[in-house]
Image 1 (cartoon, rainbow, N blue to C red):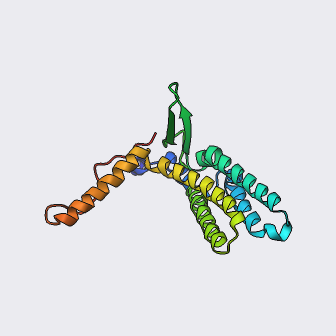
Image 2: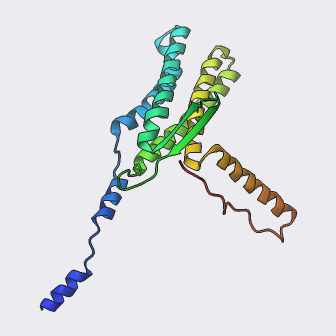
Length: 213
């Protein structure tokens, strides 16, 4: 009887670390306030742009309000929400020689620095991608309806939100040079395969390592 109890005890494997990590990954929202403000400014800018004629007849007032919301959104997404929600960060710095350097960082996952939850990452990327698309729709709408005075505001919206999207894509994939090498290698393999299909395998991305800082 004692031998059976010993055998049963030895077969039990307890790994609390994995369970805690899995529970964390399945958690819905770890930073609710940050997630709220990730969407608040950009959605508010879109709603204000669409509905400003209902609330005010002042073009200048609407223009300034939307531009301020877009600026707040750009700053908060670039400096706060990207770092906390998905562990990514990008910025520009100037060295002693006066040269400008763009830096793209992706935080490494460790026991002390756990990755963002799936829900937060989904909200972050959906908000980052969908809103610039909406501003592009506004651009063509203003252009075809000849509302030319709004074009400057719409272009500002596209520029600010596309800049954040571009920066975080580079953070996710690696540095700009790595992305260029990746694209060039893929295209070259595709061209060679088309020219000599019997000599080349299907183009792939093997052998190219994307570095994350």
